[in-house]
Image (cartoon, rainbow, N blue to C red; front, side, top):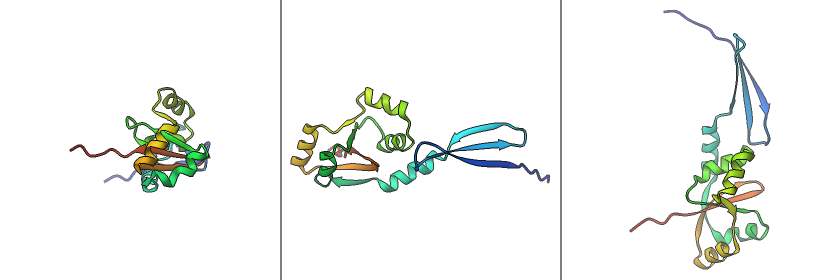
Length: 137
């Protein structure tokens, strides 16, 4: 059996927001790699903080202009991660394609009348919402 030791220096570099950072790894050979800190961990955190909630409980956030609608074509957690990581270019594309938009007056009124339950994820200052898919019968 042969034991091999590899020395690695890890340096945390702040990136955009409190919720994110980048890791710069330098190996002995001087090879540098940058990668986002564990996207899986971020998605797990967001998953724990995402829940179903009655739309009526979010009405005040809608009134403040803080609610964003995420279309069912998108994964709510992936979009929340995009917002949390300040991925401006990707978020811009989601806005341009209509996959993310402000909640409209019509949506808010319909959800209130139906006493709808939506998925919600809070990434300050935003509350991202997505309609709960109804099981097909």
